[in-house]
Length: 358
Image 1 (cartoon, helix red, strand yellow):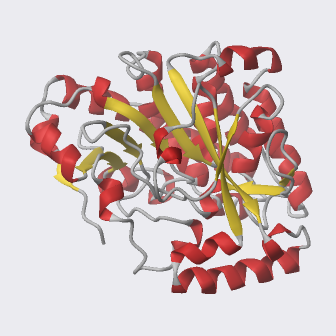
Image 2 (tube, rainbow, N blue to C red; image 1 turned 60 degrees about the vertical axis):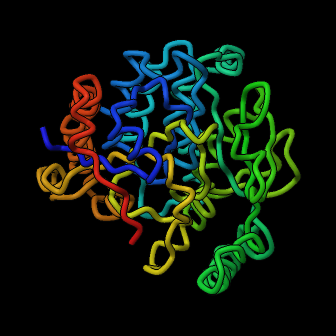
């Protein structure tokens, strides 16, 4: 126990402290763009997924960018647990050499997507009544749309400077595009303040949207001209929506579930080094955030959560990276059960803290 910390926004905190929380209140589960850090969310995901704990009273929106979108795409499949475990195996087992190019890395990414999402299963996924998937991508603009490394790097550098002045300036370099399934877009797309487009998912664009959402700038070549969406180069949705950037709750009394690898909430990818860039308090009102405790992290291999740097660190020794990542997955296996015990026993009201914006 004590492997997780639980924090809540203002309204979610009131609901939980009053004893009115149950999983039927969760109308959105948000998956951040965390790269390999998503592996510590696997135990939490699988507990919710295998027990069918979300989407019982009404459909739950699964909203994510990059790794979050990849995780949640598995939830819609005919055999979701099998698909999720196949994703883990493929993701962890993929290796890279020193001379990889963005194009070859994109090919590896598509191979991962193809490994756990079968074409024949897409009609089932798109008609899923329990879960509504929302994949966040960006359509690159200006220099960031270039596949020439130095031009894209220049565009991102300029974008970083503009974004440092005002977050809204990022839209000069990237346009938010949300791909969704269901009868209508998720509620956050229809509210004042949403800036971007929303495009229905279909059997043709499903896999490409998933891959595009994980196409990390400079590292992975973008996905070009996704069917049904405006012409252009599509990249990692985390460029704009790294963590939480909207209030995703359907109503003021609903809960947005959010498993993050750390306590700090970072709005956009370019905000990671901007300590003053904070999420808006209103966006966190309905959030119930779970993140690993310092003690949990200390017991992982190397005393850290798996991250993208591991590919470079262990480029000549992929077997060690793979072993470390599977150890992290095994260590994370009980996190969902720990959370569920707190919910079912109502002890969550005694352990929940308030999200501090810092």
